[in-house]
Amino acid sequence: MSIDAHRAARGEPGSRASGRLGAAWGILGVSLLLASAIYRLTPIAADAAAQPLDWYHWVTAVAFLAFMLYAEGYRGFQTAFSPMVAARARYLRANPQPMHVVLAPLFCMGYFHATTRRRIKSTSVTGAIVIFVIVVQRLDQPWRGIVDVGVVAGLCWGLTTLIVFSCLALNSREFAYSPEVPEQAVGR
View (cartoon, rainbow, N blue to C red):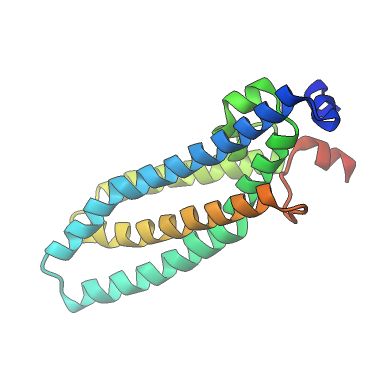
């Protein structure tokens, strides 16, 4: 057990404060990242509505919106990313390390001090998002806006679930999701 974990177990104020600060910074940082993407993409999505749309544009928009709500919003955020971020924020609150607190958003997203599997998932998803963004930026309107409508809807779902899971993780006695930290992998 780390020195900070011992301090936290004894209830020393500095450790509790840095743990709370780290958890808050982690959740806030990830939330700001999502909110920034929503803010930047919403005008592009809205611009698609100003374009003359044919029936096949509307069919594609509705189908892609439904797909993104399920794939990004529900499967990506609600069942995986949001609970993991909240669990890692909860872990950080109880086990603050100076570098983990400073880099709390990256810590909460699982880029470091995580199981190998979590680090690979986090890095792979980030790489896939970067490639997706590069491809979508090359689309002309209304297609880019149609894609961005789905992305914005999924991100809004994700931001909402992140806030809900974070409140549950930080205000409940128990939280049934794993922070996927290395110590747990060794103890299994």
